[in-house]
Image (cartoon, rainbow, N blue to C red; front, side):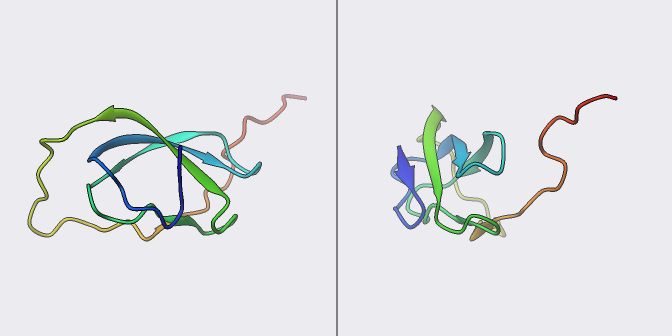
Length: 80
C-alpha cells in the first residue's frame, strides 16, 4: 500500500481507499508522479497496485492528477 505524497513506483492501475467517506475505486497513475491527495479526506488515502503497466508511455499533453475529486452520491442509497 502506498499513501498520498509517495512517488508512484510503476505505471498502472491502483485501487484507491479513502478514509471512510467513499467506496474504493481505481485510478491510472504514471511512474514517478506523486500519489494524489483527496479533496475531502486530504492525505487519508491509500493506494493498492492492481494492474501494473511498466510499458505505459507518457503521452504528450497527459494530465497529472494532483487531487482526487470529491464525488457526491458515491454510496448506494437505501430504497424506501
